[in-house]
Length: 284
Image 1 (cartoon, rainbow, N blue to C red):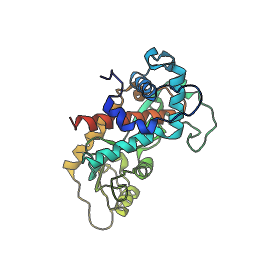
Image 2 (cartoon, rainbow, N blue to C red; image 1 turned 120 degrees about the horizontal axis):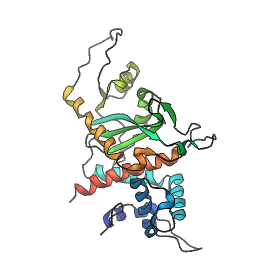
Image 3 (tube, rainbow, N blue to C red; image 1 turned 90 degrees about the vertical axis):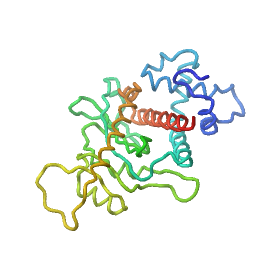
Image 4 (cartoon, rainbow, N blue to C red; image 1 turned 90 degrees about the horizontal axis):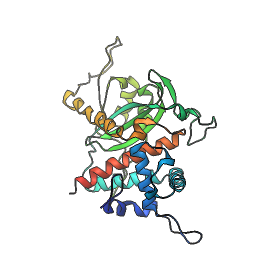
């Protein structure tokens, strides 16, 4: 029986072919399952890498394995595998999706990254000044059952509507046959996403926006007036509850990572844990 924060036998069997690498020469490789369990322990507790319990092995080895998997995109491949299994078992809602953002307070130590950026690391490291101080925003889209589909990071002062298209373009749900699903029938969001440009984007791809309108003077829109689905809009609490659950993991509730790609990897792991729990709880 797996301990707290550790993978069960069924969960490990589902992803071991992705994280395990065959070794042909050199010193024996530390057990991948043990390393992954140590990373999940850091994710949930928010502790420093140096405080990792000895049962997970040397902390430096676990941290190096985390960096290797982070740079190789291993965590994204695990999440994609879980999306596929959820679709195959009919556990994913492909009709209604919700999109929202949340701000994560960053510690002072998180601002110590260098100024060198790159394709995977923005120059600002997704850190910005907002009303809450030094913060990072997580923009996330989930389905109607609370499964995280895609996310993006931005500095805390950026407007939500600025990242709507970017997050939606990251959705890529593979299936057993046919093309991956990238769009839904209804997209639910709060009034922070009320924009004519976003509504035109939804029209272009055949999605119906269920977005609350701001109380502001604006020119009347041409064409037929849009109906507002109040019953479907109430389902927006699904993504808010998902954020609340994710922030119970202390590496998500507070940002300790200097690099945006390291914090992105932690957010991806939180999404993996959420999909794990949904997939195996619905099968028991």
